[in-house]
Every structure is written in C-alpha cells, then in structure tokens.
Image (cartoon, rainbow, N blue to C red):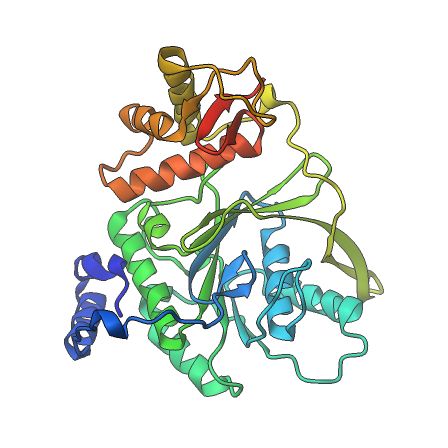
Length: 374
C-alpha cells in the first residue's frame, strides 16, 4: 500500500513522479469484506514502546546532544536481540547508513565491541553503509545494495544518519521534503521495516527541523536532549499507534579503544544507563518552542475565561483552576498553533506542545482536566 504522503510526489520532479505513477499503476486494487478484516497478532515493536516494527521514526535533537550515540546503542540491541532497559526487543538485521563521521564511527563500534562483546563469537547482523548519497536520487541503488548484501533475510531496521547529509534542496520546501519522505518510504516498503531518520532540531528547539511533510509521515518521533547533568534524555514525543511519553535516561562512558600511529590513545564513548532523574532546571529559564508558547498562552486564556474548581481528587491541587483538554485544544487552534490549516497538522502541533509543557512541569493534567502548575 502506498503511504498517504505519496499523493504529492508527482510534483517533486519528473523522475520520482514517473516512478510513483508506474508503481501505482502496478498495484492491484482490492476490496476486503468486513468478515475478512482480522486482527493481526504480529509484533508491533522492535523495541517495546520505543521503536515500531514498521514505519518512519524520526530521532532528532540539537548538535552534540548524543543522538547518534544513542541511536547506535539502541539498534545494536535490536541486532543482538538484547532486552533494552527492561523492554522486550525483537531481533532483526540492522543496516546503518552513515553519511558523516565515518572515521569516528569505527572507534564507536570498537568501544561497543570492547564493552559488550568481548565474549561474542557469533556474527552480529549489523551492516554499515558508509557511503554518502542523495536519498531521493540514490534510494533504488540503496535498496538493491541491501538486497544483495543482507543474507539473513530482510532488515528489521534501516538507519539514515543524518537527514541533512542525505538531503538535496531545502529542508523547508514542501516539494523537497515530500520527495525525501517518498524515498524513505520506498526503503520502508521494500523491506516492511522501520526506517530510523536521525535529524536535527530547529533553531527554536522542541521540534525537528524543516517542513511539516516529514511530521505527517512519521510513525514515531523521539526527541533527544542533554540535561544539566549531561545525561542523554530520549523522550518518545509521538507514537502513531501507541502510547507516548516513554523516557530513557543514559550517559556516555569514555573508553580507550586503542593507540594511534603517533602513540596517542584513541578514545570513544559507549552509552550506558543512568539512574539519574532528568533535570530540567528552573522552569522560568526554560526556552520553549513557539508552538509550546502558543499552547501555554492558550491554556492561560482558557483558564481565565472558563476555569473552574477541580473535582475532588488526590491528584489535582484544590487551589487549581482547571479546564478540559478539549477546551484547551480549541483555544490553541484559535491562537494559531499550526501554520497549516489541515486538522492533522493542528492535532500533531497541539499534542507535541502539550507534551513539552507537561514534560517541563509547566502544565499538569489528570484525565481530561488540565491546569497551570504552581
């Protein structure tokens, strides 16, 4: 089945437009009767509540936040079939497309090997693709390379690290970003796998950089940041078919992996669990993205206009004034939380903004009741 984001592919240029048209013409249409629609019991996650088994997953964050280290550690657990921080993992082959920092990656892989695989004698179903490419133009070649080289069956996950280094055009262009999503979707469809896209955050933080065409196509979105204690905080901000809000706290451990030709030590890092609670610092010093600021102002206005005393509860302060989430959402829409007029875009923008405000303890929610935290 073609992804809904494909509807505008013909606008992205004659080559990819013709490819999509040819594929669409070859797909046999069918109608399935109600009694034939059955629940699939196939595993829905590669890593429970973090990585869906199929779809586009965007992992984003500012520079030097540790997102590439974190993604590498995450997918190595998939390749090895290891439980990830107490979460069930379904083992599968990983193809890691590394478009920058190839030399540093070898040290990173050696650090993981020395830390975790000293006794490992079996082959690890992990493949590195260290060649730069332009995904829109080169994705057919990438698909054929994976089919030719992977002998353990289809890959469970393909990592694209980073979007910027495999992108041509402007990330802010709907045409260029739609073309990139089409190419990533083609990889996903070729193997029915998860495609993990490592990306940068925008200048305002709090959301991936670039046009919203990427957001509308993703099955999951994970934000990565560093707290004041230098912990790596990975937060599941959006999950299309599952729960959101999972948080994984990690830290980097430095390991000396060898000696270079000058006799100097070669070091890299491995990701290890951290027992620390994520630190958000003083709330008044938090820099909120624009959408979260709009959502916060919307809640303030809604509380001012319609706030009521909360129902008796051990979870809501008696002094709080509450409004329903639906009312808060309506105010946010009216105040322009999304530049798009599409309902889906507004829903996503509000959900992400609300999760951001709750994550930094500016807004609280219990059930349908929302209020400003003290």
